[in-house]
Image (tube, rainbow, N blue to C red):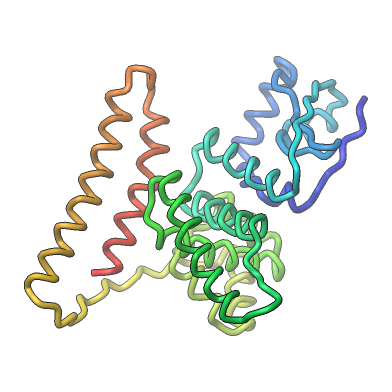
Length: 276
């Protein structure tokens, strides 16, 4: 049997299956074999970790296929887009992957400049605008959503450093935690993160109902307010038209495609709500 290299960074990108889904996958492989080939890059496993674990545990054979990439960042981006296209992800899983996609793009393109701090700042701003905009189009969300997703990805990583088990429970959906709460943890003290991680590990964490934000006094003129409303109307109409096109597509026989398209639209509407 071919030797497989396990890369922890790549494996951490994959949202963990809950126990019931893993059990069903195991039953299917035991009954029908490992039908899908595991995907490798230079001998490193980049797709099929759950299938690999099941096959190794039960001493079952599997096929592999090699893919070529020019860098680790390209592999990260491929893993992320592959997961998003194939799986029915939770809101937190999807937000985290979008944030990690942005970070991988940032690392791949590079934004530092050794000669000028001003140039570095300008390049970073240009990168954020161009890359966040491109990923927003790809995932059908707003640019601000992509930037917020990066903070959420950092927060989940911070929890994982303190408690891998708490991170697993969050990503598997075993515990419900508000995305705003996760983002806020980044600016909190380590003691606060440790306390929340401990509650999650022990199963005592309770999601606190968020308070409804009050509308701010913007002081905008009537013309500015009208223009903002028209901009929101255009954005919402574009989103709704996209969802309707998914429903009307005759190639979509079930509702999974619609659910996949619906989630980022919900995230975008939540972002709009927070700006009001």
